[in-house]
Image (cartoon, rainbow, N blue to C red; front, side, top):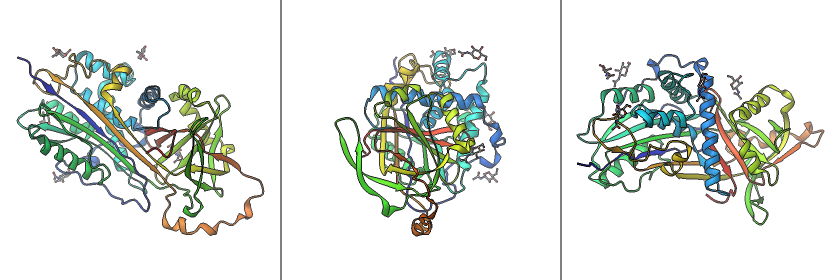
Length: 428
Ligand SMILES: *[C@@H]1O[C@H](CO)[C@@H](O)[C@H](O)[C@H]1NC(C)=O
Ligand SMILES: *[C@@H]1O[C@H](CO)[C@@H](O)[C@H](O)[C@H]1NC(C)=O
Ligand SMILES: *[C@@H]1O[C@H](CO)[C@@H](O)[C@H](O)[C@H]1NC(C)=O
Ligand SMILES: *[C@@H]1O[C@H](CO)[C@@H](O)[C@H](O)[C@H]1NC(C)=O
Ligand SMILES: *[C@@H]1O[C@H](CO)[C@@H](O)[C@H](O)[C@H]1NC(C)=O
């Protein structure tokens, strides 16, 4: 007897930089007793360098794949949300399927034993959820399980212990009801920022895994709203669009022109522990820069842009105000990164439940980003307070008026939270 069983893995991620002060405090987690305070080892020094390199490597490999699959399109996703979901899923995978997850994530189990790998994700999720000072961020996972189906106790325990996963029962035969349950949960957890994650689920679904992340943060050095002007943005040789360009010229920033790669790199800091890297390839050099992205390169830039005072200079900065979003079917992408069995009949999820033939059908990932002037009201109101007296030299100009890459980085755990490419800022 063949049981047609599906296990869609749904991922929702959202990033919003919104006006005004973020609402601080931890979002409520319904049902589970969130175990932040109980978890030990959440200090910075337990960040495992080998895990950092794997996560960054995975982020860039995925970026490079998406860039190749969707050439000349805007890109935006959360590599951390995807790798966290896959790591969590590996708790229920066995045999070849599990090995492929570890390999695909770039984890070498000789260097990082499996338990250490999960602890490392646990540390990451906890640190991220504890980062409440001046920025608001929340990452979480939820399992929606068909009523009367049971999980193996170890899977249930481990997903909760390491990934703070919440468990909800759903009746997928009532497709509308289940869809509503999931969407409302995600809406609540993301503070209303994602409201329609799931379209329609097939009635033979037995489990849905959702991971979400969002971040609200304010620029440390915000732009002044009234200086934003429409300006040309050169999408490619033939296409020019008009975008609201934010301008600031009174601030110092960390930035460099790479000596080996034709691009400039700007580090813009948020209040709190998030940083944004904006990578601006020279005209026509996008592909060359994309292909060169490696964890080592990011480490080099990060080091230079933290330590060498020479790179901290006054700059006239022009950055488009834009919103982009990305929506990806991971079941189409991940097999190309070595996760070949995951979505096939060969998948072995015998660590999740005793049920035979558990199969993963679909996997979605969504993410959005808004970049705007955002400052605290005080900063926006104090536009006149910096006089022009200290401008003896013409400042350098960094004009993001052509396609660029961005990476939003959580400095505390050294992970790329979000990554993307802006090809056309007028395309949502
Ligand atoms: C959550 O955990 C704390 C500390 O372990 C405990 O005091 C509290 O009663 C728990 N709350 C619930 C709802 O289980
Ligand atoms: C899954 O993998 C385990 C461990 O390798 C093996 O014992 C089990 O038979 C496999 N199950 C299926 C359904 O392939
Ligand atoms: C994993 O790490 C070990 C020890 O550092 C090394 O010998 C081995 O070649 C690595 N394996 C892979 C696949 O990179
Ligand atoms: C799951 O957790 C419960 C309570 O913490 C514990 O008693 C049980 O032994 C655990 N089971 C497994 C399989 O880890
Ligand atoms: C990033 O973290 C490093 C190491 O903890 C710290 O020295 C540095 O000041 C941080 N950078 C920013 C911009 O917060």
